[in-house]
Length: 138
Length: 138
DNA sequence: TTTGATGCAAACGGTTTGCACTTAT
DNA sequence: ATAAGTGCAAACCGTTTGCATCAAA
Image 1 (cartoon, rainbow over the protein chains, first blue to last red):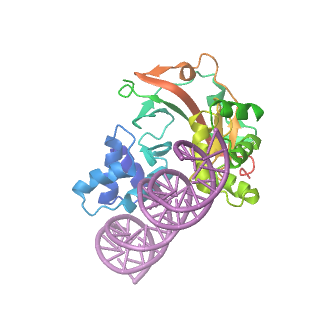
Image 2: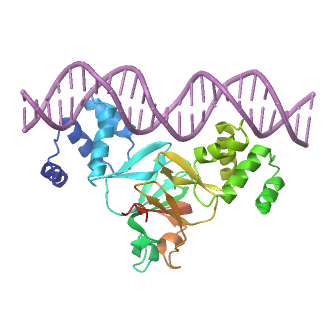
Image 3: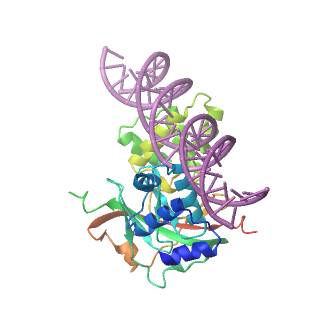
């Protein structure tokens, strides 16, 4: 938390109360919130908070690599991950829940090892697993 | 082509000219077309073709596993893959091009091997790689 | 004749944009 | 005083839906 705030200051990013609230929400979030998740929660304390600010702040944080926007969507909505480093995700086909997967490929996995395929440079990899979560299996 | 048409008939799916055109387009497509890609092309021959039909046919084909809808989007648009079986994808951050990746994890990769993680059953896995394609690297 | 597919347009919903207002430097 | 951030509403755009028309079994 403090470290992230420091990094933001260092980059000359103005830390308004709204931005602080969003940063705080992301760091305390164990899940993968959507814009509405964040907006609904923060609006309780900051009644004038607008969605436009949530969108712009999430874009800002993504652009500088402090968070990431996932490729998968929760019922049509973009969702964001407070962990910017490489890890994978499980998505429940039934309830839409997203779960972190900390499994790693073995060191010799050609997919993770590849920095380039057919002349295309690879900067990032995300694996998405689809199925039914423990709650929805019944 | 013929095989797919046979499978569709076997399942009692009416093969209208519109559906045939879409199936044909998908099978001849080497890429990962969006609804508009398909619609724009087919409309040249079938001027009354509607997008609603393209949407409904792609949903139909996805539901029965003949094609798949990818998790990634091409500039905000859903894109579809004529290959329903497991393979991975590269997405160019600059031009949005999607490329098939036929690399496979080694047999002992815990990610591919896993059928279940923390009680969540895994039915499908897709890996997405992000970077710059050979054209956009310059 | 009854069922299902098509096509048009309107509705929907998440996201983006424009702009006036406010806040920080 | 100048630049940047906020908030509201409208616009945008991909997708879905409703419904009348049309074709097939």
